[in-house]
Length: 66
Image (cartoon, rainbow, N blue to C red; front, side, top):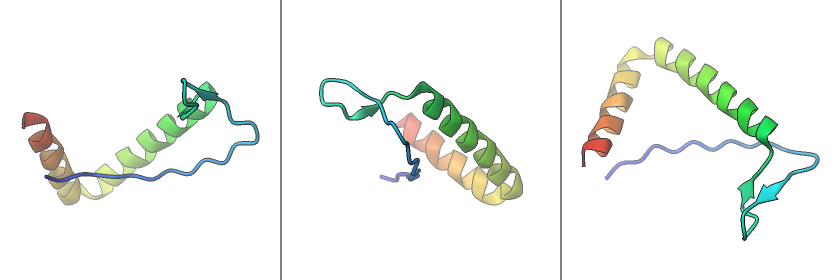
C-alpha cells in the first residue's frame, strides 16, 4: 500500500468550524484560497518534474484500480 500526503498550514484570525464535533473548517473563502493555491503549485510542479509526475500519477491510478 502506498500513500501521498500533503500538509498545509493556514492561520486564521476567526476560524469557523462545522459538524457535530466542530472538526471541519467552515470558512469557504479559506477553502477556495487553499484549493487554488494547491492547484496552481501542483500544476507547476507537475510541469517542471515530468518524470516524478508520471510516477506519481501511476501510483494514484494503481491505488484507484485496487
